[in-house]
Length: 472
Image 1: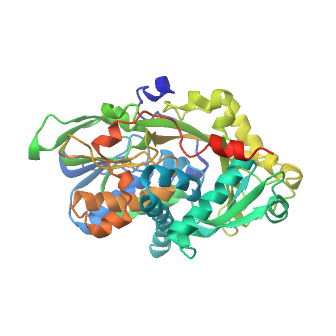
Image 2: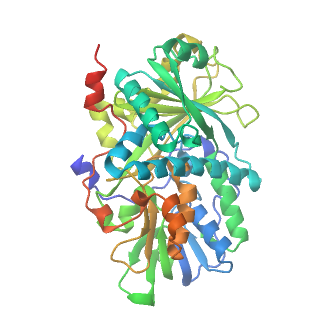
Image 3: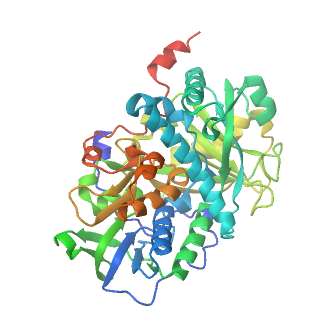
């Protein structure tokens, strides 16, 4: 892992795999403002959910601010436009680690923040009439490993003790293996855990936010990669961003570049590490409901999980299954997927595992493949993971004008919406007591953030103590 973690990220590549969500492309996909200014108050690099929400929040709070957004490819062509469609926190999965490493209060703040973020995403879509197949309902984690099951029971018990039995972020239901097969059609499980979540076309959601921001004065420049950030100016002199089309002088620069961030800011090599993920869109088997399952899913085993949504009834292509994951089932637990920013291709072994996953988990409940074939499309995308297992948000240490909101651990739809609001508050020096209680301290960028050795995905495997306790 040490060697993979310090590989130098490359710019987003041309001609990435074709994402299900981006077909057809949004009318703004290739948007490029006629004016390419030489200067701006704020330059935002990246047009995914983080960049779009930061731009919207800045322009809502400070109308008339000159904000330029740079995107290396088409708008929202990175991880946000290539994800699995989930708005799902699974906060209990990291809760015990968060309590142990950061204390009960911070663990509770993170869990509540994640739930609030999900609710905020769907509320914003409703409020602004963004057509993005926003759906809120139930999700289920189907668990196949005894150690993971024991850990889930303990985590939820701790959440209820610390947050309170009636806290919305601590609401979970448990089902045994037989109940899981009857209720959720998944075979061979130890049991399952259900709770509230949702699904959404993140691409459509973000394109809707960008459309709003453009109406508020955002200058969006697609197909304009940022190549370098020059910090040689001091104090109030700002920064210079070198792009493929010229230089831009900015008072402040925000990196909303997730897994690509270390390309622009090399000190983050080994701190934010890219990971390639693989996703497939499939037609449901003949024995599954053809217009959509009633819940979204995760399938959890000893060293990893897969995640899946069913496009809800009434949505575009209702019933389609979007499933991703499987990297830890690959040779060497998919170590070779770390450190790469190449989303123009799919690893063949992982690709096959993903294509086989849904039918495997539903077993006899799957039935026959669709006459037109099981898989409609398969694609990859680049996520960003940090050495601490949390986002990095705030002013970059030892800089005056460089800010960051990146490294969302494959959970951008659970973290980015409110994180963008938090970043703008931090830039406005509005870090008061209410902010401290709402935004997790562990997410805030600091010198401490740069001192941790990268260890891969955290909170995923069954810890040894639970493995031992689960033995018959």
